[in-house]
Length: 412
Image (tube, rainbow, N blue to C red):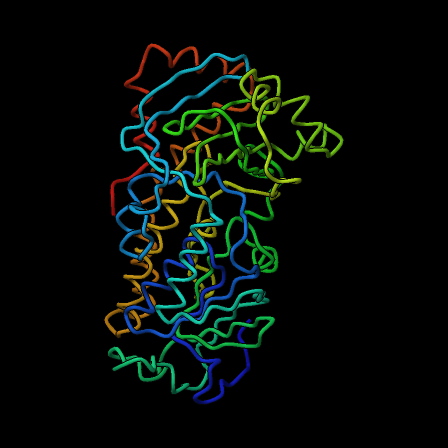
């Protein structure tokens, strides 16, 4: 459905790019575009800083990119993680060095850092703002005033003649953009409104998951990340800043339902069958009264484009959390899309070329990782299969390394 609105001339409601969602992908994309001289509006439904359900481990492939954006990782003393432990529900475990390694930082801290950098770069950051709909509007009238007021406009950026405009309806009003980006995370009201295919599928092995996250204090090596498996799920623990640890787990909605829809009951009766998790829940100091949660998570394939809206981050595709690469994928995806959008906004690509090239580059960068992640996901969750798989992997460290490499990339 196309909008009938005519954009007002020379108003703040007109921009080059509108980004729905201020997570890692949205914020880093906005920073790159704003620094290139484009006018960017970003809407985030929450107010920074806030906690998100996330494992809070980032592969080292993202270190240089984050520092280029302006996040002072080298002076923040974030824990560096180089060792991996994976345990089966029966307590059997394998330990292995991480080929590239990673670091731990909470989303509370990282998102706040990126939001501050975005504001300084010139991004119009709309906090506590809900995006209600994003509509393609190829026939909207030209809307002068789109170019950045901070200096000379980029080529082709003096207005919108001939561009495929987007009308974005938000709780703060309607905005008109030359390009619209959806980076609204794992699942949003827009996914449901648009009836994106992954929201319409029945519960299966790749969808209808629940995520739960805590911050805790616990005696655990800061250079190690552990993935503890239990029936129909797995739980990760790794260090973040300020001597805290992120404890985050994924399980099926059915597991929660069988536990009388009680997280506490599920943790006591299901997760704690794994002796390592039993020790964590018995001895750790939980820093929050209640965890952060999210439901209806899906790892199904997602389309990258819908009616001229380009998806980025988890909205474009999610790798299973046990692979530990979702945050780096979101950051890398923003770099790919930023480059494509700059070429489009400067007139070097038309709309069809933008969509085709973005799709090809995204698939080239991530489709193999997602495929490997889905395979690994199928080997965990069922106690018998997981116990057998961990036992099988113990004498084959090379295979463990290959699986890790298959879900990670190189510095970008």
